[in-house]
Length: 348
Image (cartoon, rainbow, N blue to C red; front, side):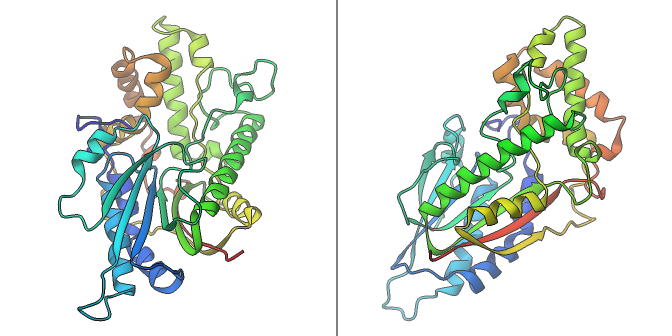
């Protein structure tokens, strides 16, 4: 995600993700009250994985802490209050300086920054009581290697995603997601105490919807078309486009459930789509939509193509998307659904 506090920073362009965080508040409170069943003395450890730079991660943490305090109030004035330790995790390239500067001054927790990929171990065994991760697991650890192999049926020439691609490309993305999800769950199973909770918010492809029908995936095709337009104009090489694929995959709910059950370390206590409000500002105008998209995608594009093409690319992208209003509608039956998933670490 774009760091800093500029026009296209994640800090200023993450209201979509904030909506999910706010919509899940009651569900987190309910989860803590009804499902949290773990032993701890006076120290409660929380991790937010894929925290980015704020402010959404701080809202999440405060929600969790308030829920835990409600369930475990101090029995008398002489007892020792619960202390909270919060671990903010993201890739080492994340703008942790902005995160650190943005930490609430009146916070009720000790804050630690933990850089590294959550597809591997990050914490000591049985050290966490609550794990949260939202809008992160659809990002893959790497692009499937088959997409770059000219001799593979999954070679994704001329495309940067899988919306309009052959089934072999979709399957390569799906297989990589399965590997990543397995690694993620195995690592968290080691780090979470027995009876501890993990809340995930994962964008999922709706039932009976193919990738080509999904507006948000179609948006990525429009960005790929914009890159190919620039290649035809000689602004970038076509080979450069052919070697670029977005490391993003939206699973179906069935895929997600199957992978969690196959892992075996967690019980699935709830899976529920986050309710959408027709009055919410998620019905974005084009400029806001482009700004949000740029905040999330620009970093990946810069790493591959450099920074010189960014403004021109997103100008072209906006013109293409403006012709297709369903692409930004948040109430299309084919649109990505944000799924709230509550997992509990099994005792064995």
